[in-house]
Image (cartoon, rainbow, N blue to C red):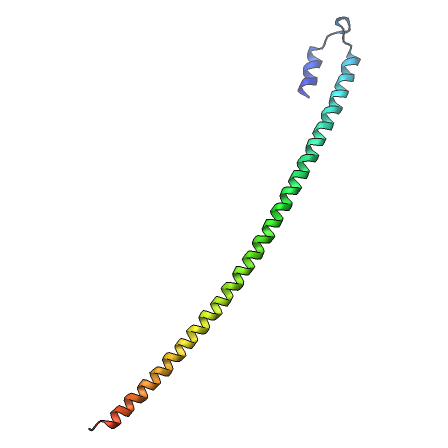
Length: 112
């Protein structure tokens, strides 16, 4: 619109060849053209943004799926680790009882 303002301020008079009516007509034509170009530009930009957001949403869905799989694997690993630790503790306690039993038997078999 700066161009229209410039033309208004620097327009020739009727005697110089351009009437105010002609200038107004040019302004309306130029304004319509500019409006159309801006509308087309915004429509294109909207389409590009929608495509970009769709791609981002798809990537986020994939990342969320990957995170879910990682969480499941971690949960399984935690359970397995806990089960292994529990089994190790049970084995240690069992071995300790056996050693204590053997020590008691050894004491009984040794002469006083």
